[in-house]
Image (cartoon, rainbow, N blue to C red; front, side, top):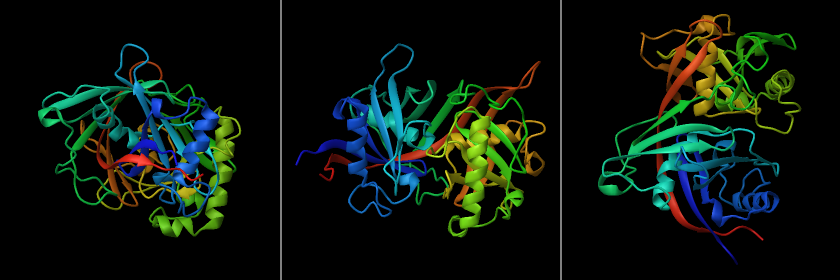
Length: 354
């Protein structure tokens, strides 16, 4: 049996298989078939593969040396289905991004500095650049540290992720519909793309409080149908076409904060409840709520100037920093910052099912 070199990593609140481009087939269809067999898809348990039976653990990062000047490495993200044999490159993943720089150092694509290393990453899904900075004492990646993030037990070394020029990375503009507020099937929504296409709606308008656990939301089949109807119609308005087989746009329901944060959220991928919230999804949600007239802005408890905005989610909180330019004309996002952690789980050979 022929195996494939692979590193399994937790990146942020996700887990995925990391590969060098050179270790996978060149043909996309052949590559995707191989990855599905590695992950154990289609199977709701993914019992015969690496997948963890939920979208946040059925992910792949493919990394290579930069093909152009101006950045260090290229990163392609693939979202693999769990029950269905789907592979999507229509969005990127900011959580797996938290481990991409370390993986590049471990594989010899980028030299490590003696204290901290900064890696410029081109996100091939969106064409944007992210900058990851992480600890490399003595020129080696150190995953240990005292930083805790909600949704992950224990602590690890912090990874600073900086995003620039993420507006419209998938849809072409920050406000893909051309409006801050739209109505879809009688539900008011705000559609924003600041690194991730997101449909923001009030939880109460979908018949829930926004305080439910991910398990409670998952058991509500009627809610899943409403979420799917809203995001499918919103996807058309956002210029994404037929999104019935895609994981984007994501839908985030917002409600007043309950635990000292700035806003409470419940996110769906595409209709399954997220156990927390994605990095770039969180960035897009915060961006939406900072716009005058956006759906749910009335719930936002804004922090002091210069302080990050803490998003409450089912597993805790995510702090997002946004630098806005609200000068003349349309608002522009200058920079977004998120602190994540990552950890190498194993490095070796993975054997796909035949």
